[in-house]
Image (cartoon, rainbow, N blue to C red; front, top):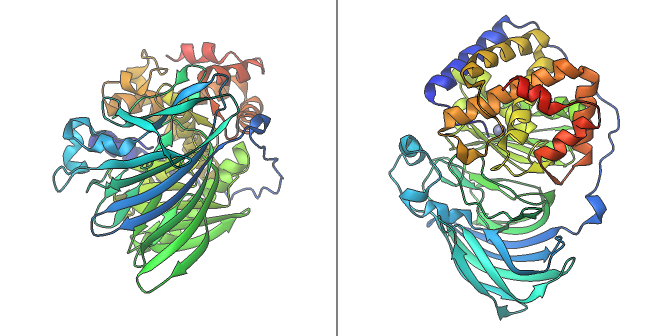
Length: 490
Ligand SMILES: [Zn+2]
């Protein structure tokens, strides 16, 4: 995500970027990269979870009705007697639990608070009802008790029937005047890692998500008037006068999101086998956003390794928080598509696109270690400006970031999202100072080691979840003590 800057911070950054771009040198043409980058499968041929969903969207009530089947494989070393799923829509049920800071409530709910939730009808295994309980402080956790223990490597098929009510809300999940944002919306399996189950709820700060790479097979019926943007690829489409039935396949992705809009101007291009689509609400910026999306995919592919999916979508949305990443799809605050914000628009699209490498392909627990994806993504955004507009431009951006994060130098960037007091403190530590630290690492180890290591990090952990320790270990194997470098800049 690009953080919910306070207006003042956002204005400062915007001015800085404008200045940088105006002062910066001419546009450097992208290097055409014909190098074939090997893509890797999942480690040890691990069986991943398969989600099959039949979805109907009811426009009048803004409800999503869904029959979901999950073929869940126990990839842990222990037998499991319970399974856990996040049911994030319930965080939107009560004013007290919505994932917004108090001073943001007006922006999130311009028409006043209204509720969002998930209503689970039943949960079955082979037509037999399973016992389940809705848990967590925000009621956003689903605990399913299995009839028999699920042994390591064993698979179980779970059917769920549920309805989702979308709130009229301009956060990630909800609808506004122009778009219907259906994100973090379905029961998604919690991650069981070396710490056990990760059951944290929908926190206010950061992107509080952690999930496993899975396959999604979707059938979706929506009113024909809407244009659909989604994770994955539409493989079939049928219409009658009123409705469209889409068949979508999203393979090896860690989430499935979709956004509907009547007024989208859709622009398309392709790069290196990836179909890039942009969905704009301001026609004037349709081509611009496509160009930024394409340049981002090209630059990051060149720097870190090829983008492995065949689609990528950049979607203007009723969303007040800048930008947000989902696999193969990012949402961008539609108000950035304006002459006043065009530099910020480029910044946000580049940032969200970098998340396709750091979050989507290489995953991590974004609550416990938000720096792992955000700091690297923020620095990747600087690299985008460096490759596109030249080193001088990037240096000026870094200078601005050094000044902005100066007051936070004695703080620890390794904190969990919920240990920061507010979004400004979180953002200046994790993003801004994080990017400065990555720049210091690069200066210290030199470009060759820096980029070779990031390339290796990407290919080694493709589709997996990593943690800070594994990240540091990889640098250690190159003779770089990353902790020492970081501690110098704390
Ligand atoms: Zn981000």
